[in-house]
Image: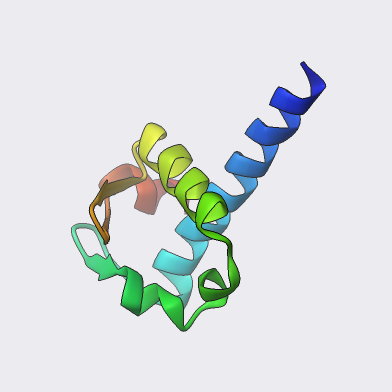
Length: 82
């Protein structure tokens, strides 16, 4: 149970950090899209793939980002949450 809670906290933290990078570092606006190549030059480039996937899944589950293949698009909810 504690391990699962820690995993959720990690997913939430990385999901929120991903959102911050999309909005504040990459200056993305609602409907704007970024590719993995766009994100590679940020600290995300240093994340392990499971961490990145976890962040994407969490952010998408919150409705902040729309994730498809290697593209991330910012939603209205994501801009409001940033």
